[in-house]
Amino acid sequence: MKHAVITGAAAGIGKALAHRFAQAGYTITGVDIDTAGAARVQRELDARVLIADLRSEEDIARILTKLQGKAIDVLIHNAGINAVGRFSDIDIENHEHVIAVNLYAPMLLTAALLKADLIAKDASIVFISSLSHYTSYPGAATYAATKSGLASYARSLSIALAPQNIQVTTVFPGPTRTAHARRYSPHNTREKKRMPPEKLAHHIFRGIKKKKHLIVPGATNRMLALLGKWCPPLMEYAMRKMILEKL
Amino acid sequence: MQSKKTVLITGATDGIGRALAKIYRARGERLVMVGRRTLSALNDPLYTKDTYCRADLSQNDCTNRVCEFLNAQKIDAIDLAIQNAGTGYFGSIAEQSAESIRDILAVNLMAPLRLTHALIPYLRKTNGKLVLIGSITHAFPCPDYAVYAASKEALNTLGRNLKIEGDINVQIIHPGATRTGLHRKIGMDSEKTKEFPSAEKVAQKITQAIDGRRFIATIGWRNAWARFLGRYCEGIVNAMVRTT
Image (cartoon, each protein chain N blue to C red):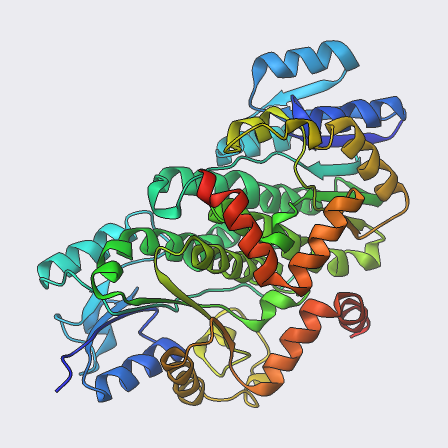
């Protein structure tokens, strides 16, 4: 049986991914800080969920020892946190946590798992970045920075690991209907327009099977990514109006 | 006569930072130079106890060190803050230690973020400018220094969003490869680095960019082209890097 490791698996996109991969017959190992959510996923899927705070290097070391002994076919770096507000209004500790969870933890886990030879041949390593990489995200400057850093790291990694036949995929989700989004959005009136996490998980699952390097899920998101890439001022203006000024 | 400006430079003991410090000193500005080494180890009249602030940017307390120094010097406003300090690693991703990853993210990303956070009130007083020194590698896949390139890409995005938020003037400057001590430190082939332009030359162009208005400036037209290709022709550039 193939083995998928998913961080942030207790809720939102991670949980939907756990369900999608379990449905395809994978053994799931989740990682999450939320004990109650982890217990729910464990019950629903007969999966193993390791409890860890990805801000803590000790916790990361602990889950690394628990991951020994079973090669990983799909590794999904999905866990992420945000801190919204004007840059100077956010406490420095919160900025720090965003970098630790969103950028440092995936790099640390990837390097350690490669070193321990736990990534199977033909495996996929998946990074959940954000559409903000293309569109900008004023009001979450550090979050956006980590997500772009992740995209860059994945791009380098895909070339470094090509000789070993390890596939690297970066996903740039737009607004998704999760508790995470609800927590960090200035207003939730357009919640229905956000992509359901199950649908996103399906996009990601299909993209990984097709060995795609980059996945921008959904036609609207693809259009926004193109606009942001080729006409940054336009998207930046829109993001300022839609997000920053409503915070 | 125009009054003296206060210019803060991190990573000022070597390479581009040191060259920048010399240029601004020649212009007669008031310098605040931040570096990891002790003043006595530097042994250079450029650094004095009134201009040199010893702070290790890989440590959490680095902003306290800098703010204490500014306090002691009775500096309450800064015209130009150049976040130049950077460190790297060269080699296989699987071989890179946790300490190395932590160090690069701390110096290249977390320290500029912390310092920016702390210096915003100083910069606001003068309507001053924050300059983030990136690297053209942010636009490329870099299999041998993935964490370094990622830290610079994160810095680029941080700067971009700070600009949109509009609280301070921000500028991002991307130099290309430069002949500095960094390559030797991280174990890169020293033969190759001989062809790179000198830190003095690059620093000169950086000051020109700082005097100019361009929000994201790349040093050198070849680097500017390379960066454009790296960003907009991703597939082709990836394939090129893969075959070399």
